[in-house]
Image (cartoon, rainbow, N blue to C red; front, top):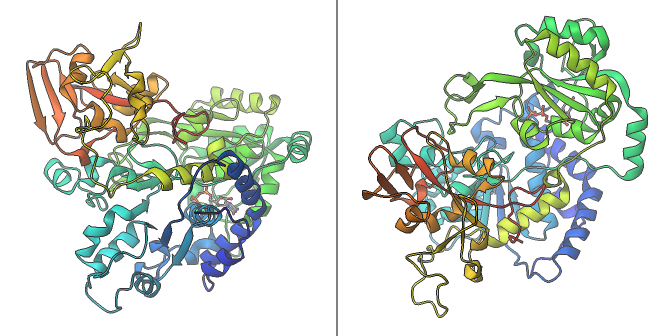
Length: 568
Ligand code: UDP
């Protein structure tokens, strides 16, 4: 039985010393300890009746190992990416607070020690059973485990979770399919289950959303922030001088400067970086805590288009800032932008921070075309006029993250062979048994399972499933979204059946079964129905004008998109 623990002493000891990145993580863990502790109390109350199994968990942070070059640690104090460090610190704290048995490794030596693999060159199979129930790592760590565990990795890989900021879509993950169909990337190819990849934002439902947390405020702090906002103070998002290189920035910075005092936290060594105009008040890179203080005063937090999808905008919004960011038209993707090239995703990024744009939106987030001077000018004046309250989506609070990680740990299982579907030899009778397992909701193209189907223990429960057909050229991500739902890849196996086509009124001339990341899908041109042959290719992402895809959508909790209503 796992017991919540709010004392972080042992966690801090385990994180170790000797690297700037580890010190950054420890400072963060200490600073947020009280917030985690009170979240743990609330979740403990909420889950009172639940048995939580204590898991043996290894966290191997591959990118921090010397063997992977550890390019991050030297940059911690120089404006390099801190988002990853923020996320790892929060993952470690969440696992610790949930009361699991945790081991942490940031070197190959530690990894070998924990896995019981003898050190040395070449691969050495792990002969005994894996001494962990779960291993959280990243792409670097995965590569290291492959090198040193050899073939035995394959046997144990269902226990692995890969922390993968931008996500990996099934078509890129499937080695054979990616090679045959042009989804080759620098990453990918691991043949994991899509939901074993865990992302920083809930952008690709094919992966699990891990996230991180932002600082929470009490009522007094909220009021004081609102009272003390400086309405003409703007802070620029971008701690590295290169982030200020955006073309055409002179024009909109001049407009902004007409109305507001502009601040920055750009790293510099001895003198002001030439990219930062002289009228900007540059504070230099600040410790997280001091950045929070600045955000409490600033009315506007403005992004120039890079970095993509970092934690800072959420922190700004949580401190009562309005986040103003550029819309990308056309959207950025691995096809047209260097940053995303070679990343295993086809996602089209519509602005600097699509989560802020789509999940938060106005009045906290304003996304506009920065080249349109009139619109930019009017927006700045509007921002100075309106009052907004500090806002933090529940999924980015400590309680929200604990709740989600708890649900994953207790329910996600990629090791057991899939239960047959429809269940055979079940002692219970299958409700509304095939050939017609779906019921049509009145006045809707959305179908739902016969209600008592949920009595079978799947996770997410079958009761959450809503079957939907996408439009031609539309992905299941979009199709579910447009119905106020979310695509749930774990439910694909229940709709990858002939009956699903007839339930949606598709008349199949023929039914084929194929490895195709768009299947199950209907092709109107040939009246062909395609079923998915390989469960690893079930994919919410992916679209083609030739197909209407069959989509397993589900409901979600307000502020906690990773979990369906009955998922806890
Ligand atoms: N940050 C900081 N000092 C600064 C600017 C940013 O400590 O002067 C922190 C900030 O609090 C955030 C983290 O850096 O949690 C990562 O921020 P960002 O959104 O820039 O993402 P990144 O590109 O670093 O992943």
